[in-house]
Length: 62
View 1: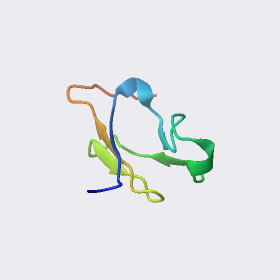
View 2: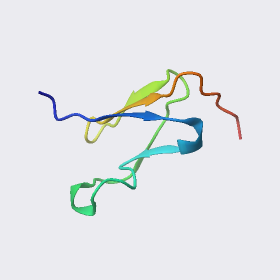
View 3: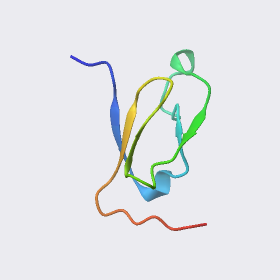
């Protein structure tokens, strides 16, 4: 069994960062922003948490 968590995110969750607000303060690491736009998926370099862009989501450019 793996300890790595996986989350599905939507365009409204961007800009994406880890740890998210749902992570307990004691379990957090320095905040890092993650680029999910290019491939639709990304893993946090600190904790390995995986994020996947929800199917059908349309990203707008700022």
